[in-house]
Length: 72
Image 1 (tube, one colour):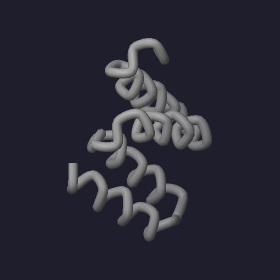
Image 2 (cartoon, rainbow, N blue to C red):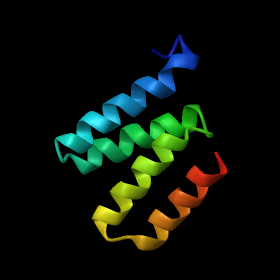
Image 3 (tube, rainbow, N blue to C red):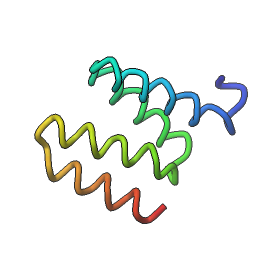
């Protein structure tokens, strides 16, 4: 996937969503952060990160992720 950067963000997002469904928050965080590193304007990935932060009990980080999502 690294040779296809235009698809890499979507692939990482998909892996993050799978990890969220499995309640593997550490893997989800890693994959979603990889998605937004590859495509900073990936609103859905920022939203998923916000949900992950809410579940982790970090409302400030959730609010920041939502703000980033809204700018996308």
